[in-house]
Image (cartoon, rainbow, N blue to C red; front, side, top):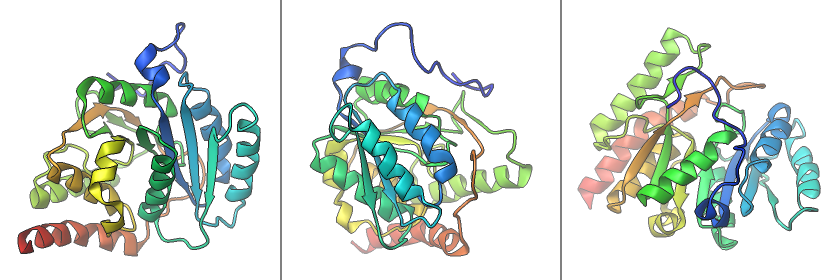
Length: 266
């Protein structure tokens, strides 16, 4: 359990056992103006004791040079193993949801079995990834969410009371409308089993912004697959600024109603 802000062990003194080391894992990270975070994030992800891990950066034409930095990091990473790090360059900024979908499709096309979603601002600690993988291996869930709100989970002390209340309200709002029974339905640190992503029909996803997280949870539940939550400590972003616009907030408010209405209509 993590409730004091302490990071999980970055590297155990022994190698991870066979299921972890054999699993083909892709870590999908959308980026927009994350040049101040990308170097550290890539180093920490690629340092994990997971030989078949691939890092997929999906950059939305960042004006701060994030895409060029990603290419340089990938060139060095791929000298060690082909396609250990993959960079997708998108010419239009369509939102974090569309970026995640592009990364997921690329991972599935390359045969990866487990797809991790995480933010590019280091609010999600890469060192939790083996824990997420272990949980999905043990439970055979469709998705495991790194949760701020289950027992043992916690938030950065830099989050003020107003921000905490808004986050809690968003979870209550989503669960009231969609009955997901998930403590952290808006959380963006997850690991998916590939068969769930193949069954969801990614082309039918309508959300562009952060409501993508809610829609994916909803579709997973509609498939009858389990959603499991694992406690994490959520950090404040390391560098840069938030990308949450008014349009993104509005979409997040409307998406749960749109999903429930379409279900009732069907």
